[in-house]
Length: 279
Length: 171
Image 1 (cartoon, one colour):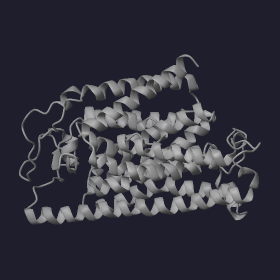
Image 2 (cartoon, each protein chain N blue to C red):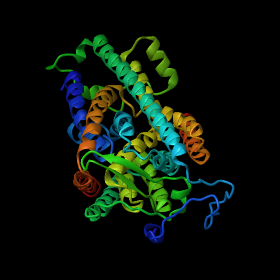
Image 3 (cartoon, rainbow over the protein chains, first blue to last red):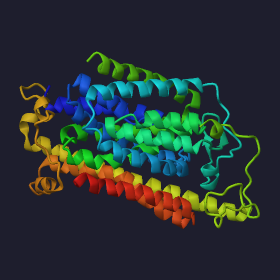
Image 4 (cartoon, each protein chain N blue to C red):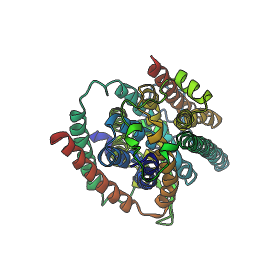
């Protein structure tokens, strides 16, 4: 395969990664890392560098559209970023200390648990109308959005901000360690612990993953993990895909988003466990 | 996590006369109920903030895509051996761990001044990396504009950690 074939094929895959990543709030990394390592046999460290780029591309590409549609809870997102960025900075320094196999097993287990927790909440359709969470009330993290699938304004209250902050710290840590997976923890944290509607969780996660990834991107650049020939098609493809995916999210139901999210998470967790246990 | 997840059924009312069960350390600050006119003004302000953030993102994204695309074009222009669809030159030579590409700001400057595609792609990627940081910076200003001091401080903290992470990376 020549460099031209590589760039074109990777750009096309990246468009798909951007659509999927922005729809479920995971970022393009969930597709990019396995594609680069399994299909193109690229070194895992370079794949993680490309994934960080794809995560930022998904976030910035999609968030521009989401924020306008008011689906992103900007306040909750910013508030939770306190924990995530701190986690990301600490994680970026642990990545060279931990063996890859351990990372795969650890990440696989984290994702398996996330998918289970998210699937369990599939029948919960109604958002909360009251909240006695002091932090959420103080910072006024509650919100509302217009749901195009249900054709009505949906307002919701936020609870469990302390649990949310704890999970977000871990999400930042995992994101920096593996280049992906911050959304995989962020969406369940907002959905299960904080009771945000699924579409809001996905959109807000999308908003946040870019900020979290930016906190560790500098480290990856200096360490030489951002290879231009990989980063260029990934960035361009994912940006295009994410813009398309952002439009899709408005039209589909929360239940669909949840199910797609769970399926993707189960696949990735099995894949990661396999790599860690039977390399 | 258990008690936080259970709403106890009474609705939390913000009013200036109510000090709050155990206000978080700053009794002086409270959010009072807004009158309909004030709420409308607030709504309009929040809308402007959202549009401003959205605009920052779009500009950052478009600029980075243009820079990355032109860098990629230059890479292929300077290296005609990259181009054939069928050929002996494998992409593996560009994606191995020993592949040289700029990964310090000094290298990057040198690479760009020599008009190398690689350097320009990396520059575009760095612009893309900066968009979320710029977004947070705009967030600080916009929360100040909304006169929401707690959220402005929260956002400022995130910004400081983000910028700090870049300096830490250089150490």
